[in-house]
Image 1 (cartoon, helix red, strand yellow):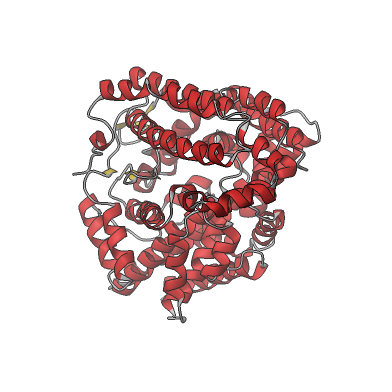
Image 2: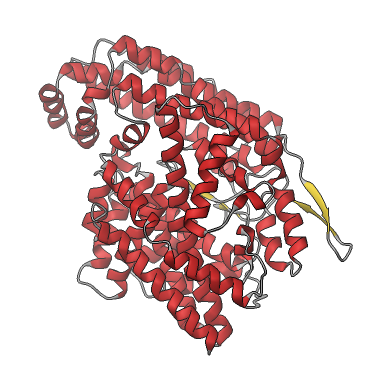
Length: 587
């Protein structure tokens, strides 16, 4: 079954409505502990009440969030999803007193509470994190004011969804052979590789990016709101920058981010060599950014969803039995919604909630990419399963920083399996291209976007105006530096910043793809080369959930991200793959 079974949350919307009515009582109960946390019994009672409320919250949010994503045009479910977000905002407002009140009690006394009770001991690391951030937690009154803006912080994300998906009009194009096709933001990537004529590819690209060009001012204003909110937050809380504010919560050194940008920016020669190879062997007069979807060899292999699942299982068959079990559980029937549908959210994700099996959203199109996406999202869901099986609620929620290690480990492993089982030169070329493109997209492209975020936030910090021109200039310069491509010659490409939803939904997110890719490659190499305890160390990361800081978790698993050499290992692998591709092409 390639559809979600959401009845594990609720049988219908009416049952959801009944539980939703219970949330205000939970919120009021949590609010009633204000001023009482200095007392051990109340401190304990509050945290137990909070877990009860969170259990209900996960059930409510999980059901309506997933249901809404299946059809963003369903106004009833979208409305209920908005109700959920308003309720979350109210919860934030009513419990905004908690952190400043706990900090006011003092670390010594709070830790004595934690050590006194078995249930509270599960909160030890969370309390350590809270006191680490002590200087950035405001007074009770100030935290209340910040919490009052909780619902406002959701506006940029809602605006983006409205402009980019809900109100967007898909374009129909007519190809040179007379055939017509409706181009959407989810299908254009799979259509481009099938088009031999450069003018047809241009048509598809321009149709896909038309919504971003036509609404460039609205997208810029929306992104400016994101940037201004980040600035208001870091200024209010006493950070030095939006970047520091984003990283500090997980104790990630700013140097990790800057080292990533430096290594990628200083090592673009391999990219340009690869693009030159592509241009030559694809016989292109001009290489455009959308030509990255063209393949060097013809490969019309279709990977059905069931076949993809079978291949993925074969690729992991040699690994640890517990690892295999959770990967298979991750993609079992009822927990994957596999295929595109009208109004369905684009892209792919794994959504997990403590106490519930994680769910995977795909838009499977039977390409090799969709096979890798299945393996990627399975890595996320298996990570959630490992964490939930080994951690209490207080420390089960792992960071995005380590999340991508679990997912990209699966991709490294799947690639090696496919290369090993390839039988022809064409298959080898296709897989080498896939490996190189994986580094291009996950390491270089995501670092380019991370650098864009860094520079856009710099403009705000310097008091510079945020317009579609200023945002596009950053992208134009970065594409020229990384790829030696002038994107102003591609109608709409300079607004690629509006095409990336993570920039609007989850600022300072995308860099973690690159850091995690670097870490997972190192960890995977350790496992592949049978380094002592390598698999055990990796399983330790999966099981550790959010019980440690992510840089520490990666280091314990075998990858030190404070060292530039971890990132340079990706550069080395990339250049070796390009060498092998060139050699194979010339055979």
